[in-house]
Length: 446
Image (cartoon, rainbow, N blue to C red; front, side):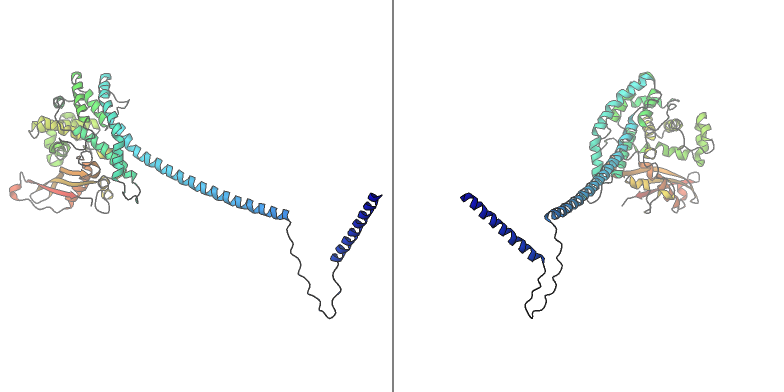
């Protein structure tokens, strides 16, 4: 019974609480209409701003976070793309620089290789390869250091100026060409000198020549020697090749090395008739062909013409047999015009830069003195002129004589001499109505 009474009382309290709550909610939902007497009506309350629910706030924050993430991701992508593009450009530039330097290395290979198409006897090729291969390997092993030297020479120590890899490659190529020229012009005595002195007395030595590459040229010349002399001849070439890469040379090419410089005036009109009378018939017919010039001749004919001229110097007692041999070898040495800056003109106004310097010579760093001999008549009218001597240096070659590059100043020097006024010679200097005058032209890059 007590429990029943307790439960009834609790139910009654619950009903009273529910009624009171309902009345309170009803009152709150109705506008107030009872005002204090005499009090003005209050201004209407501004409309309430809509409030986001907690769930809506979370959605908005999520959207903002997603947008920020997108922006950061887009920035990272653009930055990554920019860095990739920069790396690609840097890699491409590096590859281009390496390709530029590789051209010099390829030139080295070209000058020291024997093409498969080269016509040689089996014995001749074997002897040539046995001599050349050790020197190829030695020179290749020294190449990285030589390349570093060339790059260092054109680099700016402050790092403010980009390395000129094109100039470094040109200096390397010039070094390769000049070393090949020094190989042929090497004047240090060797037992094989006697082989060449004897060979120059015979016709037919040059008939197999077809190209300008020195290794191939030497292989063909030696293959034309009697079989019993070939090993001795290659022994001499090995001794000369052993000096490839030396910073200095103790025995330099002799001053009378310019064999071709003497042949050119001998083929000019004032002396041509006398020269033709001494020439062998085959050469005489070739020289008299319309438009013939020595420079335009194929290697075999040019070599043969120079061979004959070397022996003519011996006959006229202008050179000893050994001097004539050395001069002939040097005349066959490689020249820069055949391998370097092929697209740059060598003659005419377009070959000279705004400073009056030959473009090729400036790029090769050539400077020094070129001496010209000029024959004039009694009135001072020039009859012919030619280069008599070159005393030059090249910036990229150190102390080495630029034998392979030295003719790059010839055309400009002859043009300067031609434009200079000529003083009539003194009567006492005339021989047969002709006097020889010398003029030296100085060339300085600075």
